[in-house]
Image 1 (spheres, rainbow, N blue to C red):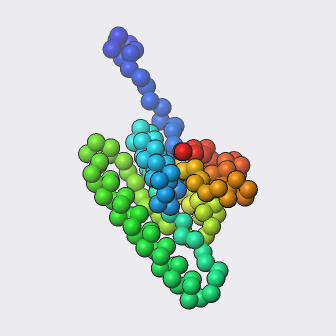
Image 2: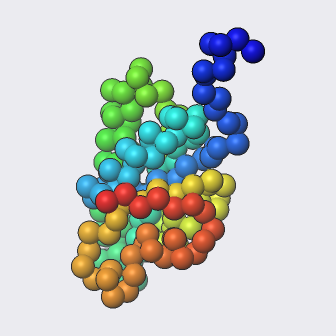
Image 3: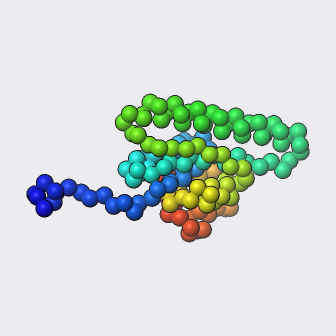
Length: 153
């Protein structure tokens, strides 16, 4: 081995292949997506960005309005992600996908991680005070113990 070869860092090939990042449009989730993009780039993994559309059990008329709103949020997030990746594609070169699932955020992310065969999950820290009593999505994902979970503040 030459001196130049011995100084070179060897990257393993057994790192994550699919990294799931939960998005809901909050600042925390956008930071989590950016962090996950960096991980995906360094590991040459696919970044699966996931938005979970909430299910509405209220009256049918209200459900349609909320359903339309969550569809609009998903469309807006997809547009924002597409524009960001186009701006940084030359320097970042991240392979990414955008997925939407329906359900509660925890259940939707679990389904996404299972279906996409995630090796890791990245989510933003909860910005809601109520989660101190009920438990945040991040805490529930960590407690599930099925994937490595990174919580980004």
